[in-house]
Length: 47
Image 1: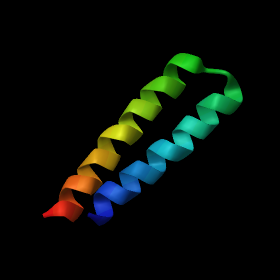
Image 2 (image 1 turned 45 degrees about the vertical axis):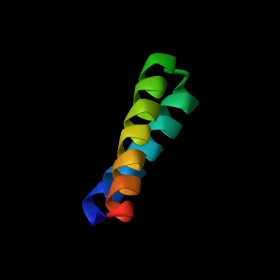
Image 3 (image 1 turned 90 degrees about the horizontal axis):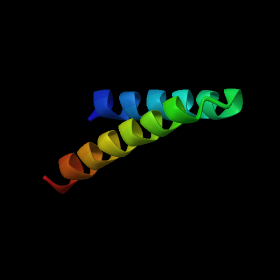
Image 4 (image 1 turned 180 degrees about the vertical axis):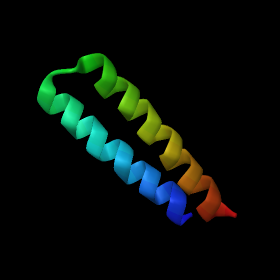
């Protein structure tokens, strides 16, 4: 769970940085990555 949380936070930071730099494609990819880790956290918490 700790590892997934760290990866989620790292994706969040990357998304914010891409948004600041105007890199739209990379921003959306980082958002998709965040969503993946968020789903994993929800699945882990449910079990």
